[in-house]
Image (cartoon, rainbow, N blue to C red; front, side, top):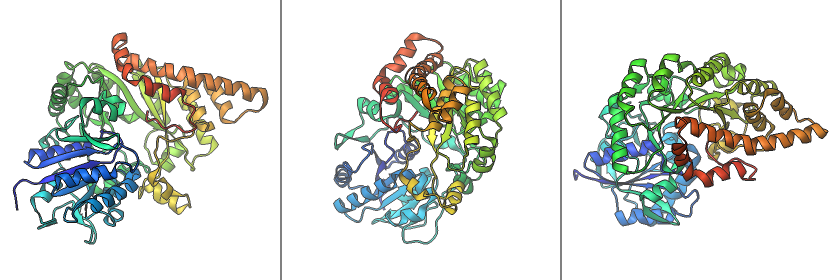
Amino acid sequence: MAGSRSAVLISLIDTTDNLGLKYVHSSLLNTGNDSQIVFYTTGDDSSFDPVAHFVKDRSPDLVGISLMSRFFPGAVGLTKAIRRTCDDSIPILWGGIHPTIDPESCKQHADYVCVGEGEHSLVEFLRHLDGGRVTTEVPGIVAAAAPGRTVSPPLQDLDSLPFPEARPRNSWVTDGGTVKPLTPSLFKKHTGHKGSYLGVMTSRGCPFACTYCCNNLLHKVYGKKIRSRSPENVVAEIEKNLSETGIPFHYVSINDDCFTAHSTTWLETFVKHYKGIRIPIVFRAIPQFVTKEKIAILKEAPCGFALIGLQSGSERTLAEVYKRRHSTEAFVQCTRLLHEHDIPAVYDVIVDNPYETVEDVERTVEVTAQLPKSSYVSLFSLTFYKYTELYDRAKSDGYPVDAHLTKSQDAWAKSSREARAIRIAALLNKSTALAILHHSEGWKGIALSAVSFAALRILEPLRHLKITYLSHGRNTLACFKALLPHVRDYCRRYFSFSAVNKVDH
């Protein structure tokens, strides 16, 4: 067996923002392997054959495909195209969130399935690969013909991993029906937010296991312990990417499920090393982990804006449906704390929940109406992800859960009274929002429709502008630079007459 092997890694997320696969790519390169990473951003099957020919031209020892649940059909089609074009001796391995939560469905199509974190598993797999087969069992990787599954051990020393690169070496992207090198211009074109956010992860794991979330299953694989990197290691990664990419990032986006789950000591050390960078950070947090002490620390980072999950204003929904352990009172306190520290926030709300009653939606309207005017509401359509607790419940109750396999959580109907009422509550007031929710008739209904149209076409985009302005410390020039790459997307988001939202907020 040769010491150095080759792999083509393919991401089926429709942007280049696949941080997990970037970690695997860096790990392979760091151990002397030849790794090429292809970002399949086409969104349909038109680039299957070009990617298959790309694989054939390189004749790697392994093809690895990374996928989330809604890209499962694409993974099936791409795997078939590669097998039609290439020698059957090249093994195809699937990894990512979907193979981790549902390996059995993946075994019907892939030669091998990776369950869990793949940085060490794929390095070991290539090391023991001979003639398209592995010569020893590798934890976390199971052959399609083998029964059961094996889970890769959770990585405890996250600082030992080589840094993922924002625009990786040996990286490619599907564009215009062909596979092209990922140049800076194509990086901006095919990366979320036009490549203006530098993504980084400081920890793995979440303190919650909400019934609708993949963490509901990942806790069963890895337990509830949150594994953290050292703050010095995180800042070193950020500085390396800033110096090597040459891309003018407007935000550093911390992709942890709950950044404020770190201790105050950790956050103090992080800010101490980070604040010289002077790029606003964006972070995700759970309300009860947002404290006055921690927010005061992060304010000095500087802090751009926070992403906070409300999900529902109904405590019944939170407790009985989502099993999400926070009260609406704790949420409101969190919003006030952020506002007091002049930190704008985007608040996530889940719509299209068949388990919610009109009364539950009314509670959400009441809570969103209390948001400060430095807030923005981002909606997500409830998606039943396979084998989560809520999926099993909904399937038992007869809901068409399997239709959710390819559903995008960003796709919600703009005409939905629920969606309009929640957005209007944050922009105007509770009484107007409740009137919209209950669909007033006659002249009052016409007047409400006009008010709703104006608010969503004028006030909501202005609120978006305000958040951007505040997140850059009220610096007009920095705000303008941050908005400039997004003019087309901004117009598509707020002025499109499409019936369904198709934009990720």
